[in-house]
Image (tube, rainbow, N blue to C red):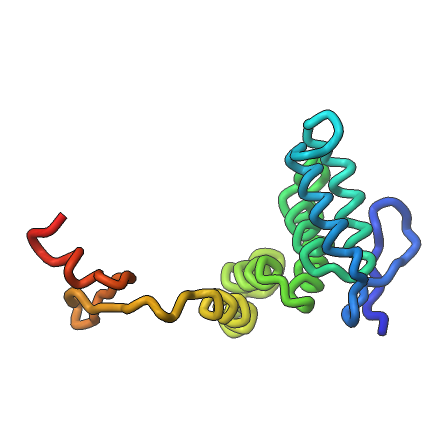
Amino acid sequence: RLSTPLLTPFNSTPTFARTERPSAHGPSLTQLGRRHQLGDGVDGGLPDDDAAFELFNRAAEVGDAAAHAELGFIHGVGWGGREIDVPRALLHHYFAALGGDPRGQMALAHRHARGVGVPKSCRAAALYYNPAAEKVVESVDHSIEISPLKTLHGLPLQILGRNSQRENSPGTT
């Protein structure tokens, strides 16, 4: 049930990131944290980085993958005046990817593709990019017709749209 220990910045006592059956409250905490990030719909209407950070940590502690993605970003870029902490960012991106969050998957894929804080590996990058790409494919409206227009270096160029052939023919605007 419990996985690798995760240290919170508030103390050195390990808590655990759950990888199975995350709490139903995790997504709500993450959403509230995002509201505090932007100052959207919260008291005072001003961004509160510290409140957002605390909420993301609480959501991550109960296994919310999106919260781990947020924390990976925060530690990776030093958001909210925090120091950049690449190992902690990688840990959070890993739990986000493990939980199926496409931002965590793409963050790890980018890091592996470029060798940022991890060994450069196209194979590892592809393994992380693939699930995120599959989610995009699943979200596409497959009822839209794809029509070839012309070729570039022998490869067909295509444009999306039901009437793409007529609308994008030479001489039409």
